[in-house]
Length: 477
View 1 (tube, helix red, strand yellow):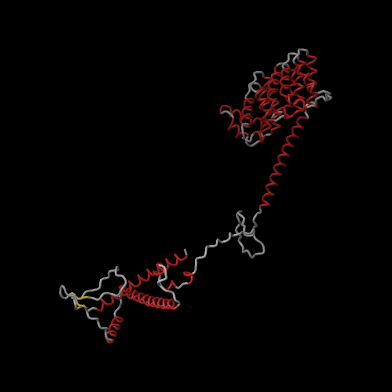
View 2 (cartoon, rainbow, N blue to C red):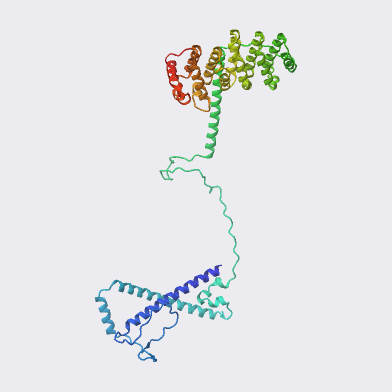
């Protein structure tokens, strides 16, 4: 490959030399044409055919007679007197732009001619030196024969071509590795004592991420603790439940409770309900695998026609909500659908029903409790059921808080505004008073009117705004 490159360079130089010699030949022809006498029309002028190649220029022929050609006599050089006169005339006469360009071109070609002569002499000297060293032209290859003698004497042409040795891979040290993090532009030079800002390292970023994660966990823990404390403070208003003794055989007691609740003996049913309370208080691990079946059985006894058994079943539900907590989230709606209609049957059930619903509100998920109350008694025909529903919805509102209820996230805000509008526009005064208590909890929130305009029906928005203004001026508790 190196030989081919050198040969290509030599070929290019040869072509350039040919072009320069051609231009020199044209220049000489122009000089000879200028020296021909203009009074001799029978003389021929030189043609500027660029196809003329190497070799001495052909002698000029006269065309005096057809069929005859005579060589012209060489033009004698001008005398020194004529040359002096011509130079003086050229100095006195102003030159045009074309003449100036032609003169510069002649000077340039003259320099090229001198350089070509020097190269030719150098090549002849190198050829003589190679003949003295004993290098015969007949022993050369066809390529070397075509190569001029000057590059033929170069040392790398006669030496064998060594195989290319691959360069070792570049090894980058750890100091050369640069960080891909964006750098801040320093407004002062690097020779300063201190830089304006420093680049944050990966360790500091990781440390900050861990700090933010820990901060979020601590904040979440504080929020849950605050909710738990608020629930416990509000749950202090509820009466305490009776403390029972643990059972010796909890598995056998649970199986016996199922069999007794399916009989008609109301005395044994009360004993079975008491054993279920003891299981919830002391043996939750035994009760949880069959919690759904137990809740179905207890809800069925809430509907019992004997008031003693029905009230005992309500108290049992209160024990289940109090001791099992959020494990009863899935059973909240079924319990609310069973308990709320009892408010419309008799006033004797109100105490036990409020006890069970109160423990449901303060121990289970408040959103689950709100949905259970809305689905269980909002659209009930009996006024006492709607009143009881509004009373327990007020407790749920206090537990959840105005900021969460009016955040506009998910369907919680829409469901709350719809429920509040239904209770505030109820036909019964007692239900409207309970709705006023609910809205007084969230009346101080700045987004209350905005959420009413967003989620309440258009036909109820004017009445709802008036109702909210009354709650803000004269809250009812």
